[in-house]
Image: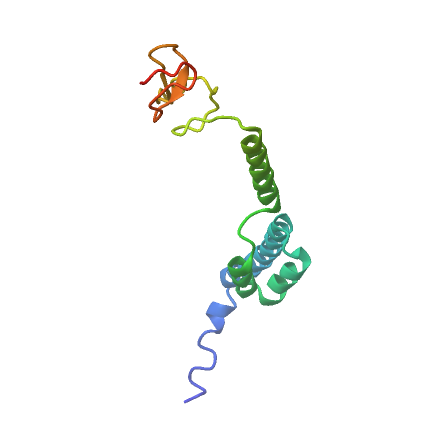
Length: 148
């Protein structure tokens, strides 16, 4: 029985188109693997996650190593984390400095504004007697002692 099927696939496997397709698939695999290694190295470097280690893992385990890297990689780039920290520090400085902001749109407003110029939210009320800006919940004007 073995002798009947021995050479059955030889004409197909030895055909030039099959050989070309095999060579193209091998070339694609090599180029894809190199691109995957380079992308992993570059991404790990931008995220501060040991780029040479992860490039070696992808070199040894190919797609499985890349999938492991995708699961355990840091969630954000180092530059983004640094920018976020600087923004937080800048906001803290603004808070310490006492810059007033609109509670609705968070745009900067002056302490004596009655409404926000950006979103038109009512921020303060005007004293009926002296016309100065008062907080909305004040019942008496602290400047002229007039009940509101």
